[in-house]
Image (cartoon, rainbow, N blue to C red; front, side, top):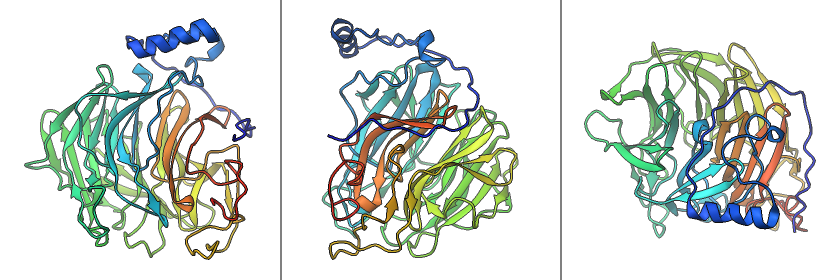
Length: 443
């Protein structure tokens, strides 16, 4: 068994904001679980109302459900504080061979509730896919999902993908999906890895960039900006200013106070050139781009698939992990909303090795390639990351050096700067993290 008594480092605390709370009618399964807890374990069931001893957001660490999603990556999480839930759709859980994922796309919908755990949601929804974009319309109580790609599990490496440009809404109260737009007319071309944000100020969804190629080797990068509203549908928006260079695999988030899309890093799409670590902001009111940071030494490593969130309580951009040019990472950085530089919040693992190669396999990673911080989650990319209740919530993702997906669940407490593991990984972690004696980092 793995030792789960981790001792996270404690750093300077920040402030706490208020949250709304919602009581959802219990399903029979959830009711039975809670009755078992009352009968045998004695803790009270979570009724959606925080106890004084649990802090302002109620119980966050209890896991009452025995269910969880399969290991997977290529997913996006959308939180909703009013219903105390985070939704995650689909993704890819296929085997990863020599750090290259195969295809096994899913069409399942999962909801995570702090203090309860995971629940799979039935009913019709989007078709199986990964690499879509998604964002939260908090006032509307919904998550919006756009685009993505799919390929059959038995497809060959050069077989084309099917790309999507349909738009779906997940209603948090009813836990049902609705198609808002089938993708015809003025919709963006089908694409995957788009940047997607919902603007409460404009009551509009914005879609930037993405990849439009069906081939797995010939990349076609878009730099278009589209806007969608419930009333008017799709329209393309011209952009001006210091436009980012063409790129894919970037991270985006919304800065709601300034009504702008934040874009960080990415790569040209050839998997040979170095990735970027520059930072941009798109003013959604004017369509004007502004470069906030040039990147370079002292800032986060160049990387693809960074996970971005905006911490409105502290007016800052948060960056977690992603795939750097020297390997996956699990670092946490901040950039003030009105600032001009990145600051490290939590370093976690340190990559100290010089090269790959172990057990006569050039793709395997030596055991001493990384100095590992066991108080932090495994390094990863393409994971579920969401900010809710003053915590960053994390599930799954791909660990490239181990050529495997993860299926663990963590939370990072922003006031205390500490990680807490809620559900252990069954796959994807290094040998040291799972207490195995190995020749390489992962085997």
